[in-house]
Image 1 (cartoon, rainbow, N blue to C red):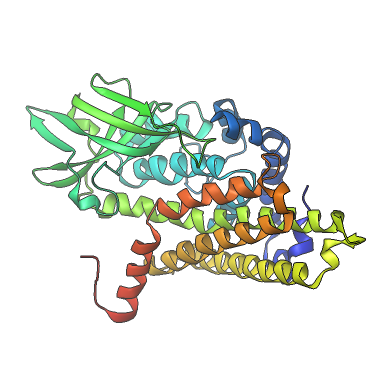
Image 2 (tube, rainbow, N blue to C red; image 1 turned 90 degrees about the vertical axis):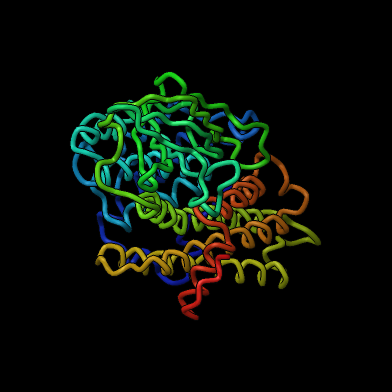
Amino acid sequence: MTTPFSTVDLLDFDDDLTAEELALRGRVRDFVDSAIRPNIADWYERAHFPVDLVPEMGRLGLLGMHLEGYGCAGLSAVEYGLAGAELEAGDSGLRTFVSVQGSLAMSAIHKHGSEEQKQEWLPRMATGEAIGCFGLTEPSAGSDPASMKTFARRDGDDWVLNGSKRWIGLASLAQVAVIWAQTDAGIRGFVVPTSTPGFSAEVIEPKMSMRASVQCEITLDEVRLPAEAVFPEVRGLKGPFSCLNEARYGILWGAMGAARDSLETALAYSLEREQFGKPIAGFQLTQKKLVDMALEVNKGFQLALNLGRKKEAGTLKTHQISVGKLNNVRTAIEVCREARTILGGNGIEAAQPIMRHAANLESVRTYEGTDEVHTLILGRQLTGIPAFA
């Protein structure tokens, strides 16, 4: 039960988009409407990730969509953002898959890999033939990745990895993992086929959020890799952080997709639900809720578009990504909570998307930098004083 975005678009957002951007958004929206919306309540209930949709996402050019070459679509930053918003309007878990595959695993190989690594993996990942994951977070190193304990030692020409990673999306489905590890020369990135002896991934369950997606704990037990498995040049946290910033950019768009879908659902419901002899949309308090939510959704999309245009122009700064991620995810959660109140008790039914969006956004709020981390990034920007420790 939704209304067209044009109904809640108070600022003529579409006027600021190109014909190509509108067409791309339309294709992704059609995919979400036909393939995701009719099934997502069941997938969420069963904690099922629809892996059979991955090839279709590849055909739509959604995997590594912002990357150039190697079979990737080479879409603009705004097109990437619009696609993310539409996917998350369907479900955060589906947008997260595209982010892990494209913004993290593929982006890492594209940015930092050797030509051989790129040729081996990126074309297959772009079509969905191969799934990738990105191993940075550990059981004791979430917001402080510099404290990671996973270690890669040299043994002749080989590398041998030992350690563990936690909350790693797609790891049990992946054919390749990008693993970040300490070495005697600092943090390095490794391209690890998941069939390598000593690599194992266990699905984390049960979960109360992101149920239509897969998160895992990875164990690395004497995982032996050839010398060419390491990223040749990049060292330190600038490697993984360059990928995290791509994912964070996608999140600031995606969160608004979930918020918009919740607002549209609440508006449609309020126009049909009658109490005291008229639709509840006619009551002042309901209209106030709808207006407050619509203002925040419209502002969030305008912020996303502004940052997208900066990204396309090459002027987007790291702290500005934190502005978008912190503001839009926090705003989206509040919109979902308010939208649920308009549906009353019916708002907790699985058939309605709002509670699912709200639960998913609690995870989105945490991954790729918690509220606290992004607050401190902006605090440092304002004061010049780092307050991370």
